[in-house]
Image (cartoon, rainbow, N blue to C red; front, top):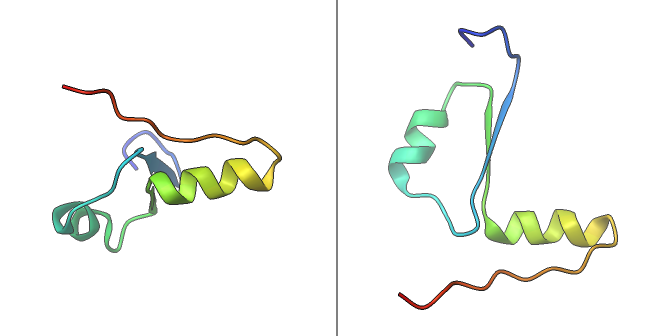
Length: 55
C-alpha cells in the first residue's frame, strides 16, 4: 500500500497460520497456499506437484 499497489498476492507451497490471516484481514492481500497454487497451475494446463526436501 505504501508503494501504491492496489493488491498483493502472497504464495506459499505449504500453508498459513492464524497470524498470517489476521495480518491480511482488511488488507488487499490474497493468501494462496500450496493446494491453491497447484489448482491454478492445473487450470492453465500445467501439471505440477510440491515435493519437500528431506531435512
